[in-house]
Image 1 (cartoon, rainbow, N blue to C red):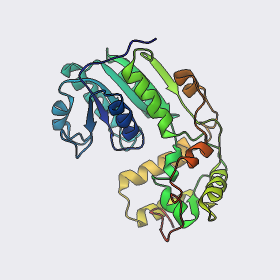
Image 2 (image 1 turned 60 degrees about the horizontal axis):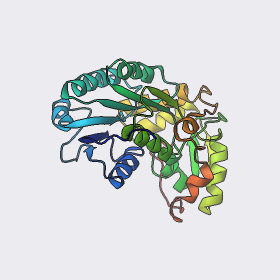
Image 3 (image 1 turned 120 degrees about the horizontal axis):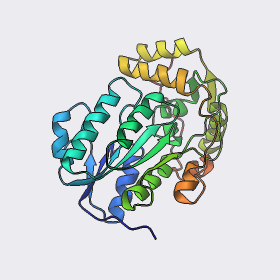
Image 4 (image 1 turned 90 degrees about the vertical axis):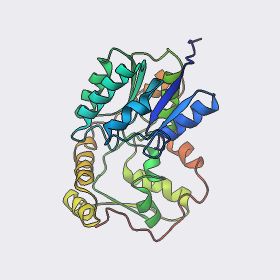
Length: 286
């Protein structure tokens, strides 16, 4: 049996996010001391306010790092380097980084964590199932149209809970020290296939409409999205979703000894009314 780690607090950055909140819940359920890493926490943490980091890192043994909005954005690498240096100085012993699959910029941040001199684990992932139930695509699902410039490129979406399970295992034992897990769901699905699966579950039709990339970005600007968000959408849909990540991996199985959750299992775990039809407009609709 791997040795269980018990000591001081674990800082979960992005504690209210798709992976972070599940990590917090699991650690608290196992009675591991947790420090919430968010803007509204008792010790606020924001990537935009380095002055607050020392207070958030005080008496922290380990940190889960989820960078928002994405490790690919300009300035992310400098933030990760500054955080890692500050964490090391504060006496942090372990880092678990949520990285981006197929993102060279994210892998530059992985190198910073690897070379930190601290114990580390890296979880490299891409699109989540939860994007359709609570994220950027949810308004489109509710409106019945996934209007996105994605063509028929398949993507092996993953359940964010699988990432959380790996992170918790890494944060509470030594078994995953020095491991990099590239994780996916069990099969690659196109957005059209996802729309069909959601339709069967939601009780109302959801269709995928492929729109030109330029029109999609124009709609995002017209909806008032900040320039950095538009840049990220451009990057994600033109670069990351170009087929480079279509192959599935065995990362979840290697880390947890089980298969990753399927879309059907994810959908079955949602409340029955999660995808009830509603007159909601997408923030990036044209």
